[in-house]
Image (cartoon, rainbow, N blue to C red; front, top):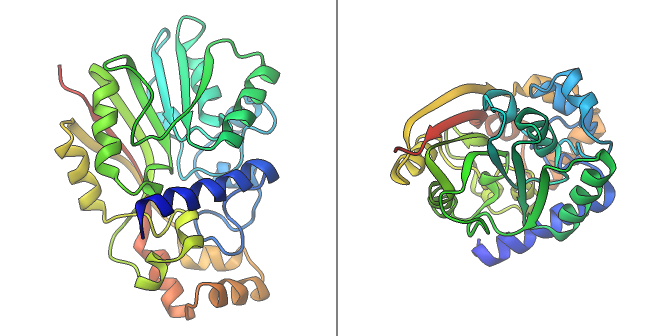
Length: 279
């Protein structure tokens, strides 16, 4: 697909999520839990009850595939950047960890998400969080100004992951680190999924092979690259979450047989990966 069209499609999809307050996991999208309940999705991918209780209402849209903040070992006074910050969920968690001495910046390319995140920050009384409209392939942040970059199930949506990781390298301070949750592939998925708009917005068709993803990070200049956690989503668990009618609708919309759907799901995993910009 054309990169411009991909960005337009993703922006439209997540604008709708911001307006409706529902997650990307519709009956047409196999990205996460198909229950459509943001809190349950977040619990399933590693967020605690305490974390869910401390964020403003409306910040959690159930869009992630991991909990990068929990693994970031954030320190008081650090400056954190969240790429694809959505309604601000991970930014607000990071804000409590860096304290008033620190700062958290969220960047998102969807105006509706930025508006929602700013409203959530105001409602929650956050003074150390700000949100910027921008493309994560061209991050609107100065060189060597960030201590930690986090991102949650967003880079897989970008047409050029090379550009994203080069930009992360540029804006990190020497010795700075990133901790990213993302979707990757263990093997290639069917061509019909790669060209599906619904699958792209739902985090599937934009994902690349795990080894290619790690090579992209390494080629951007990072060192000490490590997969901290790796999670797959058993097909049987997904089937149990939906009714037979919903499953039939999913297969019909995506033009898949049950066996093709199983193969696709088993090809996709979530990883939590970290890397360091050398001194």
